[in-house]
Image (cartoon, rainbow, N blue to C red; front, top):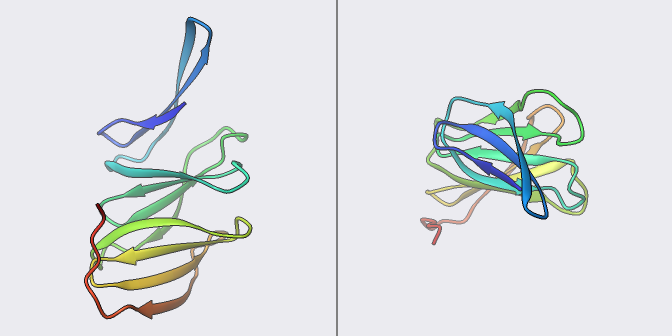
Amino acid sequence: LYFSAQEGILIFYHIKEQQYEMKICADISQPISSLVFSPDYTSLLLVTDQGTVYSYKPAHTGEAVKLLDTSSSCFLAADFLTPGNNYCVSVTISGEVQVWALEDGTFLSKLNLGIEVHIT
């Protein structure tokens, strides 16, 4: 079980029967608004409400890696663009959908929907 604390800490709970073990995986020092696993569960996107997206690979110990920072726009959400784990898509409040390369955070493309977007 992965979850995030309000302070931007990614925590893993290994639960087996009535026992559990807690491990702090990463501290990104920004409140995490969502956690999204890749389709093959090898990567985890950590999305902040400030518009920063980090990647964390559960099989590899280490810190979360900053992929992109869209703090200049009113960022709402990000997710993996399937099939595969090579790209992610983000959306802003203004309705701009953006595609990014996960390997290095390179901006690839955008599409303006022409409407304001809200997450419910």
